[in-house]
Image 1 (tube, rainbow, N blue to C red):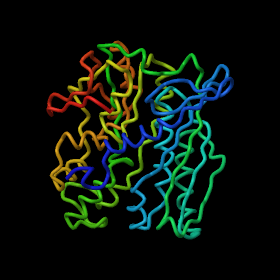
Image 2: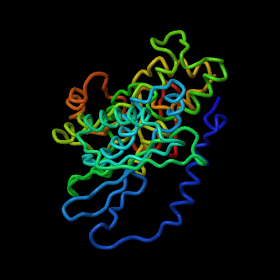
Image 3: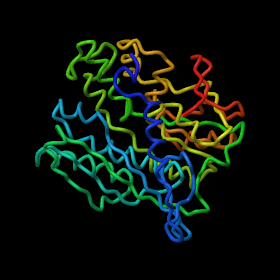
Length: 336
C-alpha cells in the first residue's frame, strides 16, 4: 500500500500548496513585515527587536480513531503539539494559542474532553490558550475537526534559520512517542484492509490497535528551548508529514547521511508488514521513531544528546551531497 492509494498524494499536495502560495503576493511594510525564511516550519514577522511566529495545523484523521473509540481527551495534546513543534524549529518560544473546533452538532461531553487535552498540551508548552472558536456546521462537517494557531516569539538575533549548517555537523534525533499525527489515513486503511478493529490487538504490540494510533504526539518545547539556551544549534526540523524529507527544507545545497537512525517503535513494523509498504514509503510518510531533529556542531553533539533525554542519539551528519540518505536501508530523498 501507499499513501497515495490510501487517498493522500503528498506530491499532489505540494503542487496544490505551490498553486495557492503563487497567488499570495502582497506584503506588509514596516512593523509586521515578513521575515523571509522560505520553506521553513513557521512564518515570521518583524516586531522590532523580536520576530513573532505564526503557524497553524490540525490533528487530521487521527480524529476518526478518537471518534470511533469515543476517546477525545488526548487529541487536544496532538493539536497543540503539531503547532508548537513547528514553532520551536526557528528557536521561537510558543506564548499563545487559539483553537478551532468545527462540529456537526454541539456536544458538551466531546468539547469538554477536547479541552482536557488542550489544557494538558498548553501546560507542557508553557503557553496560554487565549481564545478559540466552536463552529456548528451540520451541513459541512460529519463529526468534528480540530485545529489551532500558535503565536511565538524569538529575538531576531537568535533566529535559527538553518543557514549556519555546515558539512560535518551532527544530526541529533529525538524519539517520537509513536505515529504522532501524520500518516493516519494510510494506517487506518491498512487496518481496515486486514479486518483489524481499533479494539483488536496486533501481534507484537502492547496495546490495542486504536490505542497505538491515539498515542499523543510528543511535545518537544521544554527540551528544545533548554538546549538552544545552552548549546549552539544550527538547524532544527519537526519530522511530521513528509517524514525524512522535512530535513531537505533546512538549507539548500546541504544533505544528510543517516548511518544510525533511531529504531522505529513496533507499531511501524506492524503497519509496514500488514500493508506491504516499502521502506521508501514508510520513511517519507511516518516519523519512524524520530519525531524531531537538531543539527549541531559535532563537538557539542554529546552534550545535546544528554540534554535531550532518554532515546536521543546522533543519527547522522550533514554533507554536501544534497538530499537525505539512509545507506543501511538503501533510501534516498532528493526533494521535499
